Length: 69
Ligand SMILES: [Zn+2]
Image (cartoon, rainbow, N blue to C red; front, side, top):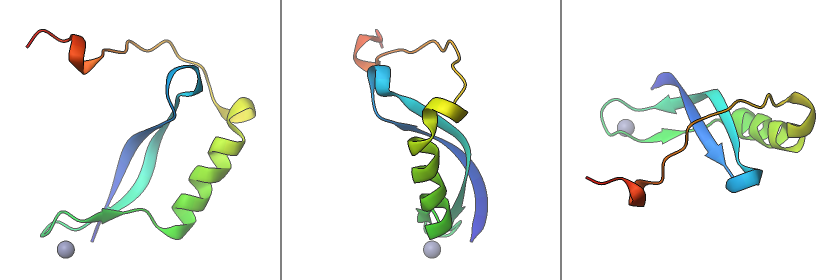
């Protein structure tokens, strides 16, 4: 298994929380990936503490449906 760091979005709109650099284990042969129990626990902790530990950044957001492909 390889350790990667990924970004995941939780919630939507005003409740959107982006967590960067989440450690994720990934299998190079079958593509299976998972977060450890400890990482999932930390994600829940970050979500619970978002008001005190999250930093607001202005981020351009595009809706896929609106993209003229
Ligand atoms: Zn595998």
